[in-house]
Length: 354
View: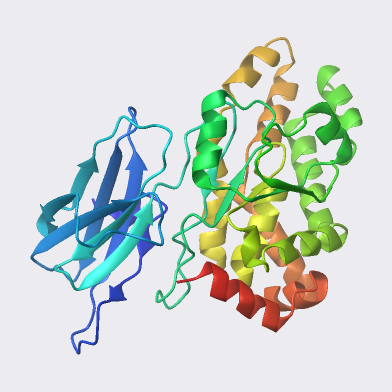
């Protein structure tokens, strides 16, 4: 089965080594980690090309030792595995097809012990597929209040310089960030009616539909009420010295999801790709601990909790529809609603795209 039909995210970006009149093939790659931490790298070319794929590995996605490939593979094979027992240091890969077409790829997620939903937003394509977001520049996650010693080492390895914490002051007080090796920028976007919601769940006075309405209201507030705070957060990305940057909130899905969506939109990533990145939070949030907490609650409350701790593409559809209703287009929302000028967007593109 074709990779692009069964797996996301894919990177489809061809880089040239010198000028050539031949039309470049469309190359799709994917990097995953298996159950024991090895990197599984897959690729497809369209049209099909024969020859050799050389694989290079680095801790830094901007720098590879081109004199030292770690392995060779027949392009026809379409898959290879980089074996490692290192679960601390994050690896990136450069694939060279016949020493002519080159592509950088990394694993989307970062394995952590006490952090939900930590992932890299590199490798997302612009509409014409000639540029992609840089790997290792921007990460997103849930709160950092339960870091293990190994988690701290993993964050050190990512080189995180700046953390944008979008949680409200009460959330920060209850669960402070435990990572002290980066500049912490708090831009509070408080949860609305959190205490009332918790009480209704405990008393069994909430249904799935109520929870969905609550989430819809929350996302509409991002556009109509919290836009100044989100605009302030986007300014952090204009300074090259702040990178790599980690965006986080409680679970890394709602406030983090909205800010990530606006950042990707600002550098020209299509809405469909943005929505897929948003929805993929469901793949990286472990809600098993909530099963124990919710075991004595009513079925209605359990269904409501499921709505609150997962993401639904309909919420991002709601956001984009509201933006277009209020501002006419996402571009106008970025400029008028989030105070991001065209020059600043160009700066973001220079920093985040290659």
